[in-house]
Amino acid sequence: MNQDTICAISTAKGKGAIATIRISGLDAINNTNNIFKAYNQKKISTIKSKQVLVGEIIENHKTIDEVVITSFVSPHSYTGENIVEISCHGSTYIQEKIIQILIQNNCRLAKKGEFTLRAFLNGKLDLSQAEGVAELISSENEKSHNLAIKQMRGGFSSEIKNLRNKLIKFASLIELELDFSQEDVEFVNRKELLLLLISIKQKIQKLIDSFKIGNVIKNGIPISIVGHPNSGKSTLLNQLLNEERAIVSEIKGTTRDTIEEIITFKGYKLRFIDTAGLRTTKDKIEQIGISKTYEKINSSAFILYMIDKTDFDQYQIEKEIIKIQKSLNKETVLIILCNKLDLDKQPINFKKIKNIPIINISAKKGNGTEELFKIIASSLAQWQDFNNEVIIINQRHFESLINTIKAIKDVDSGLKSNISGEFLSIDIKRALQFLGEITGEISNEHLLDSIFQDFCIGK
Image (cartoon, rainbow, N blue to C red; front, side, top):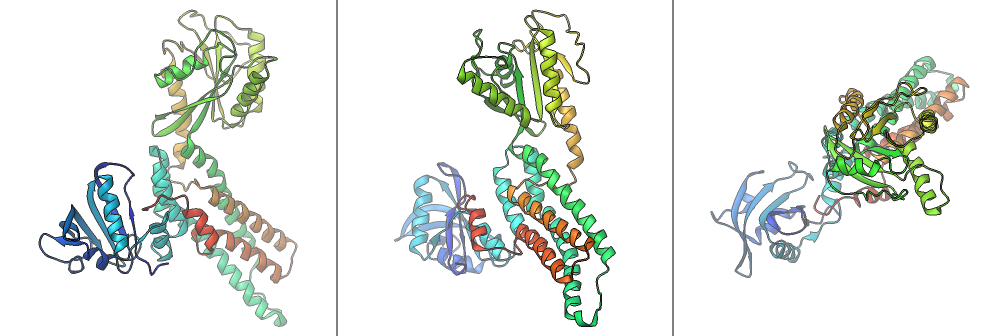
């Protein structure tokens, strides 16, 4: 595959001011030379890496477009191969025409992610860094962008390689023991290996635990708006979005399914979820909606419990909030919003509810939303401690780490049971394999296909 010269449009589809077409491979420079005429009469092959030429793309003596050519000579390029980038005008006709001409001149249309795959195969990136490229392209807010940058620059890879090198050292000593098994020589200090395993387990568990935060940052922090029908949930969502996104009606049970919308706040993506009102009902469709509400409660980082100050049963509300509070993870933040401040300014004196923030708001007029965001910001501040930490944002990495820690626990159990070196070696090799799959030191064609098929063509 690496003998082919590939080409693709690397900018977004459609019409624009300019577009970039990328060519990579052994013959990238020569093939582009065949269709390009520089105004200064120079050939692409004569200029230094990262220099540019201005000229025209020619087909049968006919000018197709005026372009800027940039040359990247192997190995000083993204893929490690010769690369030429053509900056042309953004007409869809021009883009497609240049691609057609390149294919006629012995180039092949690139597959999804093939440029980054070649960068991996040529040792310019490891597999985790290559996946960081995809994460960077898909990042939609400042925080997920920061995590993707760290992954692309090899922060996570360094952690994995460090853990793997320590395990390799002990694996090699155990293998050496096996070679001298008849002499009953012990090269491995079992106590040192146990201490190493404890250290490795702690580091891997920390990475595993970080996935929850990384996944939330990447996909959006879920904030569920819950409460009884007509408490103002949909009105609040519309107020936060500054648009009429959810239907607001005096008829109870209007919202029967969840409605999700996203806003960006302090670099985070907040995913607000309007839910079906909590009540006892015989309507089967509404019952399904209420069931989904409880599902969202269990998976949310924040829960905004809405109360209509003008119409509520305090005993029932307190009982329900305490029930929800007991079912939540310790990281979940529950906030009580006492709505319709514009109609009733008297605070609610809760008797049984403790240690839960309570805000008086008017969802209709927006009063109290500033205080709500202050509490959200305060809760998000605890995540700032992870700014200098490696955080997992990739499901594949998470699964590999889960498998690694299982193998490490088997090694730990084997050491404590004083099993033979042969079996210890098998479990250590399993752990090494799972760690190696993360960075691509151990990979197969099926794994690479599954990873790079999610990339866009041209990257």
